[in-house]
Amino acid sequence: MGNLVGSTEKEEDPNDHEPNPLANFAHVNRDSPISEKELKATCMVMDENRKNKMHFIEKVLTPFDNADIPYEYEPKSLPVDEDGYCVSFTFDEPEQFVPFFEEFGVIVIRDVLTHEECVRSEDEVWDFVIRISDGRIERDNPETWEKWISLQKLGILGNDCILSKQICENRQNEKIYEVHRHLLGCDELMVNVGRSSLMRPTKDVPFPTGLEDRENWKTMADWLHWDMNMWTGWTTTFSWQAVDHDKNFGYDNVKVQGWVSLVDCGPEDGGFHCVPGFAPHIRGWANENSDKFQETTTISTFQVPKEDPIRNHIEKVAVRAGSLVIWSSKTPHGTFPNNSNHGRMIQYIKMADVNDPSITTLFDDPNLLPPDFELTELGKKLYGFEKW
Image 1 (cartoon, rainbow, N blue to C red):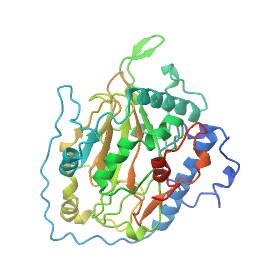
Image 2 (image 1 turned 90 degrees about the horizontal axis):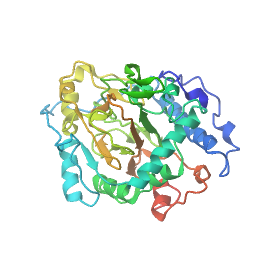
Image 3 (image 1 turned 135 degrees about the vertical axis):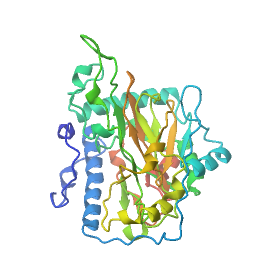
Image 4 (image 1 turned 120 degrees about the vertical axis):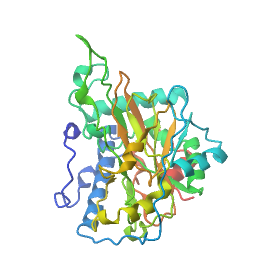
């Protein structure tokens, strides 16, 4: 998997692919090394991405009629505690966190992972970094961190799926399920199998010669985008399998993204930022900015224009280890750079209505799961191996 290290973040050429890119992984089974399993799962995601790009090549889109919807966004500030961490809730407080999510478009749920689960997850992400770098990156040797993983400027560990035991356990976590169940308003859900993130520290990094700063290790400072097309309501299907693209348009269904923190992600540690309170105004924004509409689309994300004033209202969402962060696909969001001696590490987790007509689970082979991992009854349904 070493060819994924240090690669550029360029658009894939949809015509540059093998007829059957998964044919090389026919031998992968339950007893195969985890690196081969992860590479197969990653290729499944990227092949689905390729198919979706082919679908949208030269496809002309029609915007929703938002002409009668005024743009009435007013800035909102997320409440924070004395240490600058975003106010949070517990998984069993839906009467509090659902209205909060509807108002701000983002929510933090604390303690969905225990301390022990966070430690195991952190260890597994570092093991993952070592695997996908073919051992060139060492956890305790910052001298090996210079050549990092692809998508480093976004803080993401490439497009690579991570399939270690605790990471898989986190995807069937009952607390995470309960929060999604209340936010999405349905009991029958599915979970994605996807990526992780590790931002390197950039201040007082302990090299053998002493503490040094690494400004060039910082991620982009101005990354702000939507996961939903502002004019059509089309939502990214990344890490899902697209079933019917024509049923993926419209603003009505609640679509969310999310991640869980494996370490403390403080106000200076780099991480998630967003424009709170914007989500209900996406159609008004589309009406106000109808002159910027493009008739073609991509299957990735939709960037907030550089000159848009909502950029003046970006707020950091700092969270403690074990916290779950969920945001609406209508919420402008991105990441801010690390400016501390403490790394930022998360696992991306999102759930969706299993009856969503536009998407379904992409991960369909239980043999790719770790041999020492056991699916729970809930997990079998979330992963898509059993029907609800």
